[in-house]
Length: 214
Image (cartoon, rainbow, N blue to C red):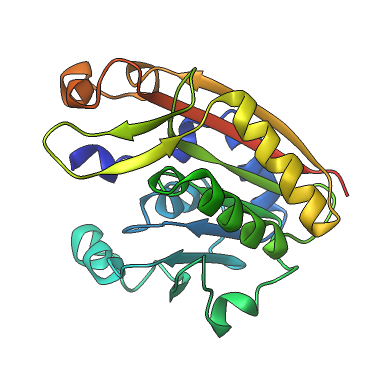
């Protein structure tokens, strides 16, 4: 659980660009924000809270205030919603977001549902130059992931399947996306190998930066 409190966004190759663009007033949405640690990292590094939004299907936002004791100075537009069936508050952001971060979210579903979620995210983006960045479990071979001793199942993507998914998003929405994606080890993104051994050797981390071209 402790690793889920560590900001992941700083490990993205797009982080310097994201921070620079937010300082210039661009809009940001953290999907699957949990307690808001990535947003707090951005603000600590100089990004303004204005034009930043957060969304999650389960509300841990209050716990974030209790943990960081920053209710009086951490002001972010938060909404509890399901990206597969977005409510009015999230729908109001359609076509308005410059940068979306989505980490530890899409890998919980099969490929069809991941495509549906990615399509919903694409509709939130403002236009050419918008970014969708993040991390999720993946690997070098597409497979159904299983966590030993649990009923957890998810369809894990490869860099190739991830690129194909965004081609499908473009076909469905009339948009065009450039995809940068690679597999990284858990150690590479700051995890202790002992904390991830239960997931198996094949399960690694997919790092992605998806740029809207039109």
